[in-house]
Length: 87
Image (cartoon, rainbow, N blue to C red; front, side, top):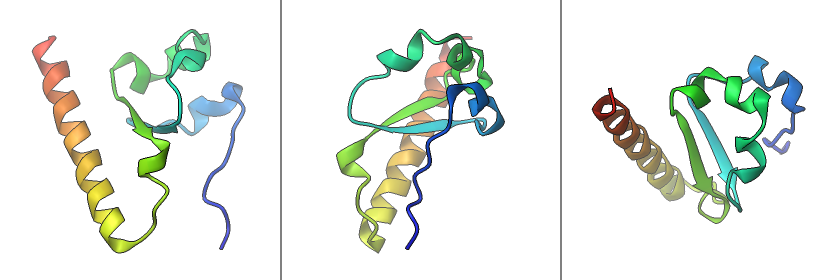
């Protein structure tokens, strides 16, 4: 099975970034937050970046997928509520 993880240079990240960005991290976003390319992404400007702790997303079994999907949906709903209340 091929590895689903890919690295991209920050200069081309805007070609791959969607309306939402989900980052699997083992640390905080401090290495990204100060980057001008990162800050220029619409999903970053609109508060639609989500950090997922690396150890919670290692698993690929059906039960893990369901839990991960539910967690992602909850993250989106909560962030949309937060963003709506700031307007």
